[in-house]
Length: 220
Image (tube, rainbow, N blue to C red; front, side, top):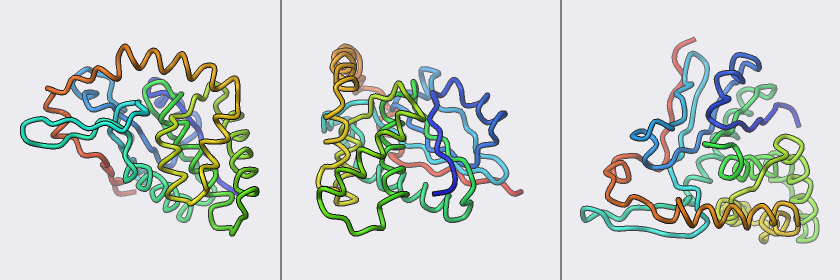
């Protein structure tokens, strides 16, 4: 498998771009990021595309109702599909390129998306037995933890990835079998209960921001 996947928080993107010459970005934003100043930087530029996926870092499948519109708060299956498709297109065009996956802290949404990408790139086209899928998912997690040791992958994103790639739940199972991650996951869930789960439903950004936005590359 050629090419590289790196994971960074938004705050480290500029340094990573300058040092590593990143070829494309998948960025997670929360719905009010444009109003609270914590949005992912726009790194679309000549030869560089960026996919922006807007959702809260929550593992609850939750929707709201705002101004007669249904609002999705949580990571959606179509966002995970878009991320996998974006990564596949990038590596097909630039096999030796480097793809950055980023979210606010580089721990949860981005690491889950990266794990799904790693699995699909290595094993997604193979016909595997259930036991082999579990083994390959563990390998994808091991690779993820080399890339980003502080990873605490979002399990809802992984559930969507499992369904899309028909892994039989292998990605979620691999993470749940890791005691260290699940210990940290419990603390993260408590933090989400204080912030993420009390989402500002009145914010118009929840209506106006698309779930998936592809920022095209400028002319080379």
